[in-house]
Image (tube, rainbow, N blue to C red):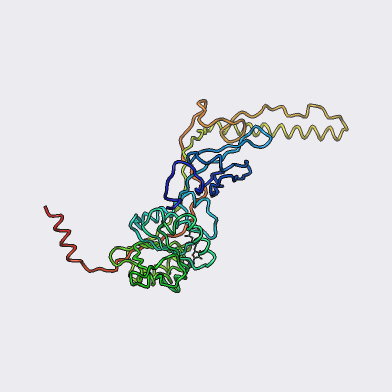
Amino acid sequence: MSHFSEYKDTIQPGDLALVWITRDNIKPLTITPGEAFNTRYGSFPHDDMIGKPYGSQIAVRTKGSDRFGFIHVLQPTPELWTLSLPHRTQIVYTPDSSYIMQRLQCGPKSRVIEAGTGSGSFSHAFARSVGHLFSYEFHEVRYEQARKEFEEHGLLADGNVTITHRDVCLDGFTIKTGDKTTFKLDGTSGRDSAEIGADAIFLDLPAPWDAIPHLDDVITPDAKVRLCCFSPCIEQVDKTLEVLEKFGWTDVEMVEIQGRQYESRRQMVRRLDDALERLRDVRQRKQQGVERRKRMYSKLLNNEEETSDVRPTTTKAQFNPFGKGSRVKEGDTNFQWKEVSKIEPEIKSHTSYLTFASKIMKKERNEELTAQIIEQHKY
Ligand code: SAM
C-alpha cells in the first residue's frame, strides 16, 4: 500500500512522514526507533514522535536556554511532496496539476500516460487519483532515481504506477518484453506487449510534436481520449497545434494559469488635509535644518564653542497616513478605513501554456449497445 494513499491516525516505526520545519522547509523522514532528526532548531528523537497522532507538534528544549524548537510531523500527500521533493528538473506544481487532472477527467478508472517523469511531482498526484499511470523518462539517471523513489513510496509493486526508460519521441509508448521497465509481462496472456489503453495523456516534454504521432498505438479505441501538453514557449504550442490537427485531435484549447493570492486588507482613508499637514511638516523640518546648518558654519568660522543650541527643536512626527511617523494598528477606531483587496506581486505556480485536445478513435456507432441503452431508458 502506498504511503501516499494510506491514511493513518498515529505515527509508527517505518512510516514515511513529512516534517514541517518552516513554510519553505519540509523534509521527508522515515521513522526509525533510536534515531534523531537534526535541525537548526534542535535534535528531535524519532521515539518522541512514535505513537503521536499525525499532525502533532513535537518540541525540544534548545540546549542551554529556556526556549523550545518545534516541528510538525505530517502524513505524506502529493501536495506536500511537491513542496518537499528533491528537484531534478522543473516540476509541475499543484495549481497546475489539479487543474490538468480535472480537465483530463481523471478518476479511479483512468489509464494515464505521462512523459517525462522528471522529478515525479505530477506522478504522485496522478498515482493517488487514477487507475493506472504509465510514466516514461529517457534520462537514465533520472529514470533510476524516480523508480527507486516510487518503489520506496509503495507506488510500484503494490501500487498503480509503471515507469519505463524510453525516448518516447523516437520509440513511442508501447512496452514490450525486454524493455527497461517496471511492467511485469506475465506471459500467460499470450501478449508480448503491455495493454495500455490510455484515456488521458500528459506530455511535459520539449518536443511533444514528436511524441504525438506515436499515441494512436496506445490509446483506447473505446472512449474519448483527452490530452494535455505543458509547454513554456508559445512557439512550442504552435508546433504542437500543427501536429494535433494532422493526427486528428480535436477540441483544441490553450490555457495559461496564473496562480495568485488575493488578500483582504483595510487601508486608511487619506484626505487632502492630511496631505497638506504632511507638506507643512516637511517644510518646517527642512527650514529648521537649514537654519541649524547656518548656525553651525557661522560658529565654526568665528571659532566659537558648540552649544546644545544645535539640537533640533521639532517634536517627533505624529502618525500621518503617508507612511512617516508613529505606527497605527490596522483597523484602529480613531481613524477611518476602507476595505481593499491586495494581490501578491509574484505569480506562484510555474506557468506554462497548457494545450488541451481530445480524440475519438472509433467513431462508428455500436448499434447493439445503443439498442440496449434505449431499451433500458424506455418508460
Ligand atoms: N512533470 C515532471 C514533474 O512534475 O516532476 C517534470 C518533467 S521535466 C520538466 C521533463 C522530463 O522529460 C525530463 O526529466 C526529461 O529528461 C524528460 N524527457 C525529455 N524528452 C523526453 C523524451 N523524448 N522521452 C522521455 N522523456 C523525455
